[in-house]
Amino acid sequence: MNRHVPPHDFDAREAEAFTPPPPPDFTKARRHSARVRWIKRLVPLTIVVAVIGIGAVSILSRLKLSIDLPFDIGHLTLSGSRLTMELPKLSGFTDDNRGYRITARTAVQDLTRPDVIELSDIEARLELADKGWASVNAKTGSFDTKKQFITLGDGVDLAMNGGYGGKLEDADVDIKAGTIATSHPVLFTYLDGKLVADRLDVTDRGARALFQGHVQLDFRMSNLPGQKPDGANAGAHPAAAAPAAPAATAPARAADATPPAPAATGTISVPPAPTPAAPALVPAPLPPRRPVPAQ
Image (cartoon, rainbow, N blue to C red; front, side):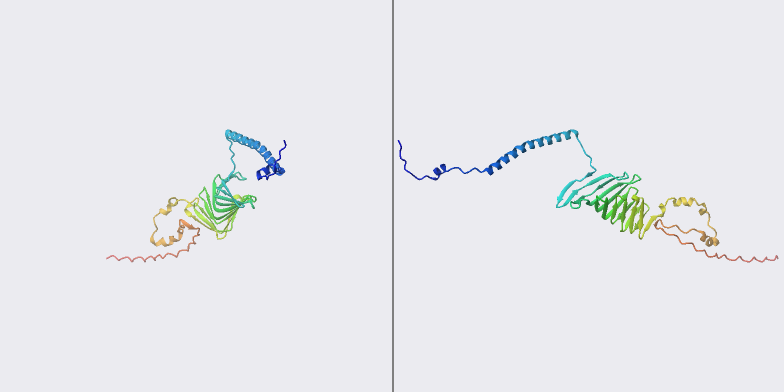
């Protein structure tokens, strides 16, 4: 019954069948088990977040909730530590209940200096105490939100609804103190003239303005309050239409005439005092003729 099997060489496949299996890799098994547990927890959490998001969007769309913020930051870009805001807008009211609105082309904030905002192409509109308005345009500026201090530069243009305007090279505005100061030449224009100076200090929230250094005021005399047109002034003095005096006394009356009025426009000037007129040269009367004897 027992048959002798002669020995022979096993090939690679037959040898692998008789090779004992390698020891199991427990590290790989633990990593696979942890991955499975994480996926089992992530899937329900994702479903819950998706359901909450869909529900929130649905509720807000039904309520049509709108939040009116006092500012609009527009488009944001981040480059290194500098955050750039395009077309920012800011509106609100001052401590004395005056409305204001500020817009700019760009606003750059350095994350290392979060209190300072650099602005370009600034346009501001502020309500005045008399229910009027004033607008300010500047090329560049910076706003310190902590100190409430604004620095404007590269040309500042002012305009008010009463026809007044001004041009400054730069200006320092202290919002808390209500002051404006500049140490460079200023030019203000009015309906009836203009004012130039080397320096300007505005205090008491615009109630007091101090001009210093080579101050010059030019205005039109015809627009002074209380002055009447030339026709009205001529009618107020009927004596001006009286017939002229004889030629012999004309030089004597010339001393009583008022000096000519200043030109319609120009710098304020005081007319020189009239010099006393020279005595009139009146010819002496001729002696009476002798009577002719009767013939």
